[in-house]
Image 1 (tube, rainbow, N blue to C red):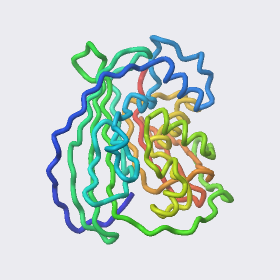
Image 2 (cartoon, rainbow, N blue to C red; image 1 turned 90 degrees about the vertical axis):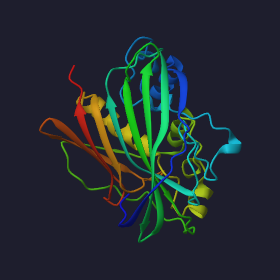
Image 3 (cartoon, rainbow, N blue to C red; image 1 turned 180 degrees about the horizontal axis):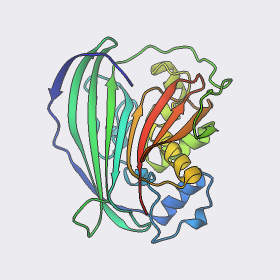
Image 4 (tube, rainbow, N blue to C red; image 1 turned 135 degrees about the horizontal axis):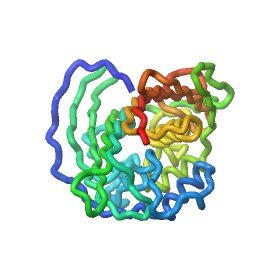
Length: 288
């Protein structure tokens, strides 16, 4: 999300790399397929994990007593509060070096790379950059590197709920698809990633504490819907992904996705129900 910045101050980063052994289990992969309304039996041990599904390997094992007040678990490393109780995903980039076989054991190294304090017209903000490296258990190089940028924001007053379901964006692209995320989709995605951030699962918190009109669609879920749109409709798997999360998307409100080919890259966007750009993504395709 865009903010006008006046001051920047680098903060000290806690030394808390989290190294975890994870299993890319057939069961978890098949549950992602079921969530996406795909045939789970088509995903078998030894086949490559679809690129974009790696979120099942990044769930944090943060104990409930150590969660932030907003429920965010930290995705492998504890996210600080710093007096800023709200958190939103700002951007994400992923480099895929090689495929991860379904059923493989992997090592995930997660760390906070930087914390930058900013003064904006909307108040203080901290930008937190988290990096995840995932490699197969016996490899000496990562299979993928994912970098996520989060915005830590000050408290806000609640706002009355507003209607989010009566409009569909009017946009043009090589391919256009509209989806309406419901509570079940948000719950399943959050559960598969062990993400307890309350803006995705607690409507009262989203409305009364954070000031949103409804449950917020996970930023990672929006990215996944776009990469799946590209994979299913265009037969394209990514080598790199660069996504900017510009505006929130809401449960029960149509998301209109478009894809366009631009020279050697693919441009994807997701728009909310009022034709506002919410996610802007660039993909370099994987050449088979």
